[in-house]
Structure formats: C-alpha cells, structure tokens
Amino acid sequence: METLLFLCGGVLLGYLFRKRKELRAGVEKSITVMIWLLLLFLGIAIGANQQVIENIHVIGTKAMVLTFGGIAGSIACSYFVYRKFFKA
Amino acid sequence: MKGTLITLLFFVGGCLISIYGLTPQALLENDLSTYALYALMALVGVSLGMDESSINILKKANLGLLLVPISIGVGSIIGSGLAYFLIAESFVEGMAVGAGFGYYSLSSVIISSTYDTILGVIALLSNISRELLSLVLAPLLVKAFGNMAPIASSGATSMDTTLPVITRYSGKEYAIIALFSGIVLTVLVPLLIPLIL
Image 1 (spheres, each protein chain N blue to C red):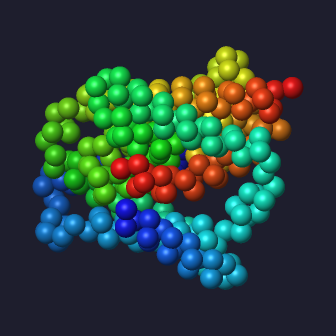
Image 2: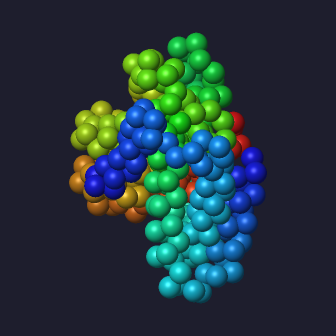
C-alpha cells in the first residue's frame, strides 16, 4: 500500500518538473533499468526457491488459466461497449 | 520483441545466479527489492506527472471511448479472478494477476515485492503469454468477436507492442482507440494491484 504513496509523490514531483522536457528520457531509462534490476532480484528469489523449480508445471498451468480468464473476460465485457458505441 | 527478450534475460539471469549459488552476500542479507520497488514506483509517478499528452488525450475522451479501457479492465480482473476461483485458488489473487493487463514487468515486480514471490512469477508468465497470445490471435479474434477484441485481449500493451497488429486487423480507425485504452490501462496497473492485494 505504501507503494501508492511513492507513486503519488512521484506524480506530484513529475508535475512540478513537467516543463523540464530534457529530464524525460532519463526518467524513462531509469524505469527500464529499475524493472531489469527487480526482475533480476525476482529471478534470484525464484532460483533459490525449490518449491517453484519443482512445481513449474503447476505454476505454468495456473498462469495460463489466468491468461485465458483475463482475455475472455475483457473481450466479453468490452463487447457490449463495442456493440453500443462502435459497431456501425 | 527485443525489449521482451532483454527483460526476460534479467529474470533468467537471476534464476541462474541463485541456482549456481553465486548470489552476492549483500543481497542475501538485505531485502533490497522493497527499496528498489519504491524507487520504481516514484519514477513511474514522475513519468506520469510529466506526461501532458496523457492528460490531453483524456480531455478528448467521450463516453464510448472512456468505456473501452474501463470495460476491458473490469472484464480482465473479474475474468482472471473467476478463472482462478474455478480451479480452487484465491479469487483476490486471480484479480491481482488479471490487473496486470499484460504489463508483465511492472505487475510481476509489484506482486513479488509486496505480496508473494510465487504469485509474482505466475503474474510474469500469465501477462507475458497474454501479450504473445494477443499478437498471434489478433486476426482470429477480429473474425470471431469484432474489431474491439484484439484491443481487449492486448490490455495495456495495445499502446505499444501489439499496436501494429491491432491497426492491421482491426483497421486504422481503431489505432487511436487502442492507444487510448492502452495508456489508461498502463496507468491503472500500479494503482490497482496494491489496492486489490
């Protein structure tokens, strides 16, 4: 939950510096690097976790179930919007 | 595609480092990932705050356009939650993974650092496959469910990686809708996941 505080603080800071366009590229690059770093940490945590390595097929199956649920749900829900507002 | 591969390499690299016992002592003693996540969230915030174009695009939105990302987001979260519940897992955890909207890098690191490492991996795999499936299935989805379907399945990725495919199969007039929907959903990922979990 405290992650939201950092997010909001960041938005405020970014808004204050919105005219400093030269900073933008640096911010985007830093985001990419931070994500790389965190995925490296996630990989390290996973590699040390015997439970994950032994159950990778279970984890993979769960992930696919979630993927199909998400895709099906989003298509179904947005279909009504499509029919009402977009389809000629 | 190149970006996806580089991102995955870091994850796989991390796995290999720890499997071969090469993890630096400093990392074992301190939980740096929490601080790294705080820094990341602040940076994401800064980039949102600086970005006037996303505010301008919102001003142009009419009701129909606004309902596109909302319906996709709601459908995604409920759909994943329900699917997870049906295989006897937690509805809430399913909703959190569904709220990644295909933005696999950010969603997986938020979930793994604030909630649970294994669910973070599930989010990584699930949201990567969502992006890949959306790329591959786009023509089929248009045939079966109409022009909006690939935008829905792409989720947050409809603003960048899957945009070319959407433009090709749904038509050029859907590019701006895809862009809008993708931007809104991307902004929602770091907001919704902490709220759900």
